Length: 195
Image (cartoon, rainbow, N blue to C red):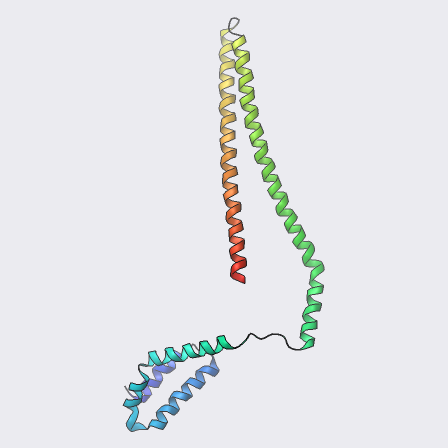
């Protein structure tokens, strides 16, 4: 491999770097070859290793350099004052919107809870009505067979409907409970990831 081929491959591998770091790295390798001279190109290539390995070392060192530099913070007082004024101006809009959102979520949760409680009460009422209808149909034992059969059928229908509503309400309650727990986990993972 010649110097030109080596530098061409290095150039291809280092294109991902920021322009300044890319230029510094390419200048370093060019100067390294220039100082060694044409007669020592093979020795320089052996010292540096493959272009991919050399590029990986440069990318790792550039990454380390950028991670060591502290984050930039606003230093001028004008910037800090401007950000403070901006946050104060946004507060009268953001706080009521946040409060409205929280109240909306609470209202939806209360409505869902009320619907589930109503379903349980409705199912229980169906079971109670089944018991009353069964008792009434037994009192008709001697008077009318058709009325007694109709009462027994209505009692079975009411009991089955009440139990079915109770089962559906329980399934909805379990599903919504799991969904709420998953939602809370998702929110907490987002907060943890943002920090």
